[in-house]
Image (cartoon, rainbow, N blue to C red):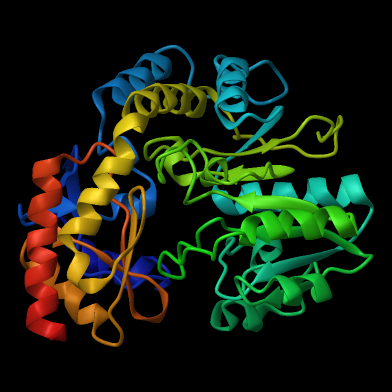
Length: 377
């Protein structure tokens, strides 16, 4: 076996902090290059929604790979129209444009908002995360990753999450869109106060701005409904999706309400919505459809199992405030065979595969309780 750490250090830009190689995965379990086994509660950061290497998704990808791997969007792409139809129907929206990632989806959403409104500015929220490409970074709050690349477009104002009066003051006559995560994922599973999402919709309507719901992390059943927005009374103008949409295959999308769509030559992509992406995405949607009825109960089992630590729970998004010892908790859990993740501000984030079983939840909460008691009590 090659000394991949040495090769990586020499040839791969050191943009990531990594300690292990995950060599293989099946269901909610992964194995590292030393053969150690882990229960995965991170799922590639909410990506492997149907678990690792779900049989239906693997078969769909392999079947399509044997027929056609790539066909540019100069032509009708096999499976793309059917995938778009299914996605529009489960989101209760109208039309789809596929992308390769969540950042690309948010870029597309911003472009569409500017085209539709003829306005140029955006408003987003403190601790919000929308991507690392230049456009998506412009609307991402975290100063440490945004400020080195300023000035950025679109010009964006940042408002405290939950502050409707601050939002009303920030949205002006040149605001094309407000970008909202229904639950802030990278911030550590921050759930908004009651009525906040409805208030954002009202302000957008008052000011003539579009509401873009960034459901890259919350979408595709993660919270127990197809979209987290489906748990509110609000219909967004545009939804951005990725992560759990392809079970690990790179798939993203925007889905827009009726009357919002790119016209010919206003947007494009060589790879987006290709044959493999469409096959993986369609298979993923069918699997999630069968899982949806049980997701809320699984979240409640996590809540009960971790009740001592006051977890924030919505479906299978679970956050626990740990503080500065969060990295130590993450490391100790891994030593005990459970992969968890530290998001921003010392918040422990759990976003396991949607297929996780009751027995796996109980095993996970047992270890997490043990580690938190050991380190944080």
